Image (cartoon, rainbow, N blue to C red; front, side, top):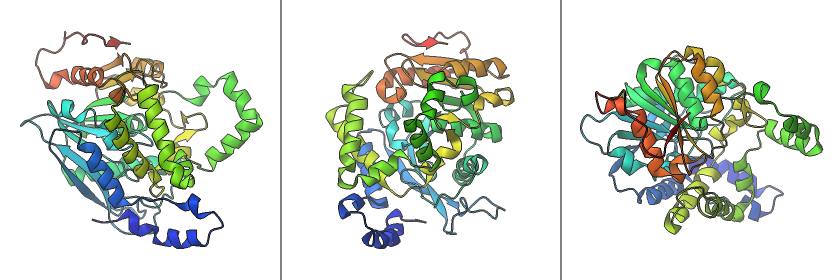
Length: 387
């Protein structure tokens, strides 16, 4: 193991003892071991056997003078990876989580998808159970490279090629950027509620303009540009942090759920997992201000790269997804490769949690050419709609 997150907290703990903050606000009981344990507990809900590993990706891109990225340490880094048992010759599906999440958020999907794919899910560099190097990126370009190049080194280490790449939200943004740079490795791209298909200049609303000019907007914009992340709040809440995460997961995926609500056990295990991955050392989360401007508009919209697309693509959106699918519709007009947009009922941004069966149907339909020769005239599964 190249790096243990808990060991990097020694200096921080010493500094905390000298801090003027009350001890109750410095209480962050998490470590690499806690994250791994929470991951195992959550994945105990999955019936399909799997192998978990830390895939070594070195200390930086080959030939680069920049470590991952501008980090003061030259320790090798690793990507936390789970690979599920599959039938022989199954197509490989690589799954990439979104901002503030980790691969365990796909826990409701692994069994169904593993019935037809060789499923490999990762925690992106700086997230979940992966290494958490100091985040020293200073631009959008460096920040994109942090995720794209670390993923490419992971691919090389795993000796993968000709795979289907699925990314959710910010993970969809990373997956699309990776496919633009390395299209030769990706057979099909599945973007689930992806970020990057709208821009501030194209969708700047009068409301947002007025809000930014208000005192509240000025404060929030300052916090955004200062890289004040949601995880900062959870850490700052100390012993009340787990309660905050519990309230969110209970509301979002239970009482306010659009589709299939979580069981009590699912909610408890997901809350525990989410807390430990969110409260750990800040790293990949600090990409926020470099990728997005205030209002969650991407600084380098994928919409502007649609004409350069080289990989067949399927977009999947929940009917109630706050990510607007119309951006994908606009992008499709400029694409020179096959592209379809599927909408799943009774689902929001976390379509794979809200309506797992609908999400699985959409993924299977997107990948129908890998399962049958006569795929051209297949209709959408019942309940799904095409944009």
